[in-house]
Image (cartoon, rainbow, N blue to C red):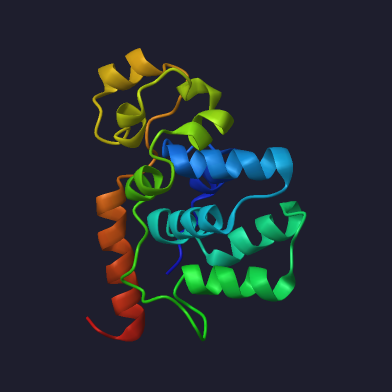
Length: 169
């Protein structure tokens, strides 16, 4: 039941999802052909469980972009993140991109390095981008996009999708 979300997929590839840690990771990938493994897990979870896009789309993108691409690691990492492989994370484990950003980049140093639109914005605002009002977001960073999906809603949809696939409904 993967979604055919071409706009969401393109926003993910371009680092314009409105989720700062995801966008920073994807922009680093475009600029440097590399990203840390933690970011790989975050962006993979976002693609598969927030955008509900087939993990193979991300696999192919990473294959084509990563300087350190390795077929076994890439394939295994994507299947793990998408909860589809032989050694996958539980399907109900959905990375929260806001929590991940706060935990691994509390001062938003990494984020603002790759997302220049957010330079000068308070880290609390950056990590709370999804909760800020449209007026607050426009005032803080008028060029940075609004979140393209609601994480909480998509988390529930992803869990329901996996439960249907397992026959748990």
